[in-house]
Image (tube, rainbow, N blue to C red; front, side, top):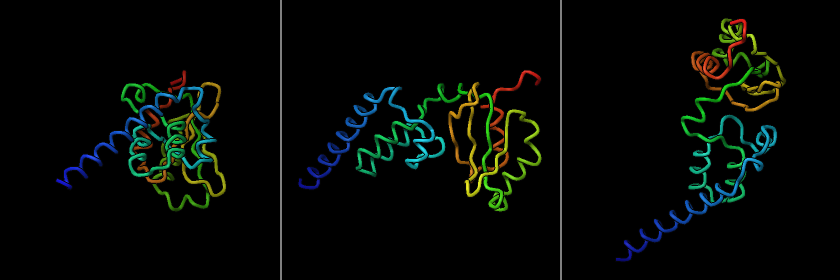
Length: 167
């Protein structure tokens, strides 16, 4: 009987945590979203999906951390993510570290010319990342691409960067 009570207490605790997260999620409005730079400063780089924040909350009991994650995450419903496109991108990488990323080197050397709105910037000590730009060349999203294969980078660029009018 004691084991059953412990299981019920754990289930109840887990359910209450999920309710708290849902309440927290519903209180965060669009105006409370943090900028890409603020999120990077907090350690949230790359494409953080809100479902990742919910998973984080199951393992980390720091509500402030979960709250910050939720302010930096992107809605991960299939429809909302598949429709987002950008007018350009910056591929940022440290020139000295390029030797460790042959897939990215191959993309830069052989595929970059297919994306006229893609700029390559060499920034000292920067991990490889894509910085997605809106129509005003404002930074909208930063995605770490350390472990991406060349074909994944190519596919992502084809899906997410609007073709130019000359294409």
